[in-house]
Image 1 (cartoon, rainbow, N blue to C red):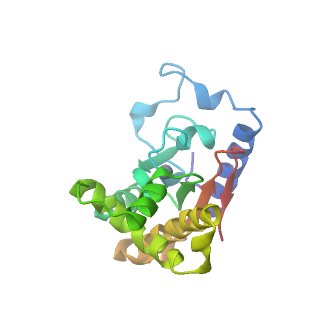
Image 2 (cartoon, rainbow, N blue to C red):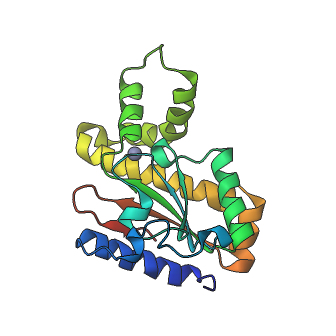
Length: 205
Ligand SMILES: [Zn+2]
């Protein structure tokens, strides 16, 4: 299958998520190993998804896609550190994939943990866990200074979206390779949020 343009890939994800949200998952997305297309002959993923590790948000399921369709990077809080940038560079340069989606989700535990940490700092946190919290911290910190601090639900909602935007901007501007692909090859990096309540993914502009 020829590599899809970013817009075509986006449309395919939208349609897949619609099927998932309506409980109409396709047979192709559920094939076993021997029924699946020749996955040992290489891969041509049509989209790269950087999502949270949360067990309730597996990218292949919520977009109703099968083996070989998505190049998925998952990390708590869908943060962007050097290894995530490298993974996106690898897939977009190697496979010609033209769409990157940073997929956050409602009730994200990593964002909630960051909020807790800012309100009640602990000394005992592991340095590894701290490295995740530190990347989410600026999004939450800024909001805690605003009127939103009186409205916890809205604060969390906004923090989750702000954290997605930080990751999107990091991918757009934190790599010469990706900047060039965006400028010359039609690579698109977009943010999105999965709703645990409805099963629907909302894409941001
Ligand atoms: Zn999460």
